[in-house]
Structures are given as C-alpha cells and as structure tokens.
Length: 80
Image 1 (cartoon, one colour):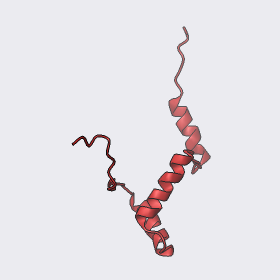
Image 2 (cartoon, helix red, strand yellow):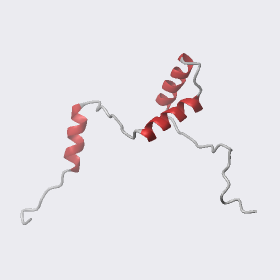
Image 3 (cartoon, one colour):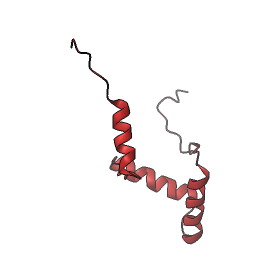
C-alpha cells in the first residue's frame, strides 16, 4: 500500500525552551487566564506570527544600540 499521499491526523510534538523569566511570565499568564493552556497559547501565537511575521523590538537602552553599531563598523584603510 502506497502511504506517500495519505495524510496523518496525528499531532506532531515539538519542544520549546524557555528561560526561567519566560517560564514565570507564561505560568503567570496561564494562572490568570485559565481558559488557555500552554498548547493553545503556543498555537495561537505561532499562527498569528506566521500570518503576519513581524517583530516589534524595543531596545532596553539607547546606549545598547550605539555600542552594537560601533562594534560592527570596520575601519577603512587609507589606500582604499
């Protein structure tokens, strides 16, 4: 029997690593919102991101941006 064209209805399990701080945030959210479980929350977040893959990143400090830009600049040689 050729099963290459059949689709499986079973779920695929994937892992996710969280920092201790992220874990506290997730657990706090789930405790405050008992209608959600971790799987539902993760699926919703992934679907939303895949539908609109944009990230909004806010720097902690302006100095962090300036320092990172200074590290990436290269010096030009005088002969260039």
